[in-house]
Image (cartoon, rainbow, N blue to C red):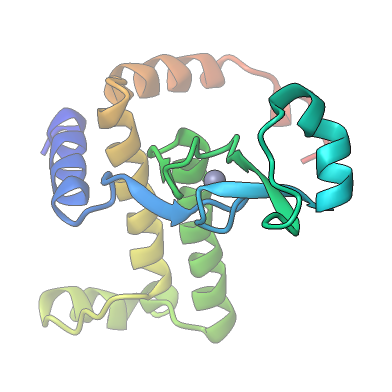
Length: 175
Ligand SMILES: [Zn+2]
């Protein structure tokens, strides 16, 4: 399988599983009401503020007035559409590395014993969530994002590997 094919497959599956669908959340600003209450003012002060301009209000009927404004964040729609965003996808890639670390902490890695690992591979002793699979998940998510953004990972890998070869010991850093 080429890296190009890998990107295409990873992105296709991620789309099928809904990872690129828009997500809707209730608007945090208006709590899903569509408006916000700017203030509650009494009849007296309301009149004082507005009557002169409107000249319509009946003093007896009007007791208090809520001053409402259409929510500035959702524009009255009550919910906010979150477009799939790249920083979120990057953080999900990081979360796979976090899972790899947890697997390592639990000692959940097949390749700690080469004999067992090679046997596991041939005798279908496979299970998800091992250290190895979390590494694979990281690549799957990277391929998915790269395909979405139209990035040719193979080209960049070749370029970067060739560049890294020429760099100094530890790239002149401490570690
Ligand atoms: Zn709102």
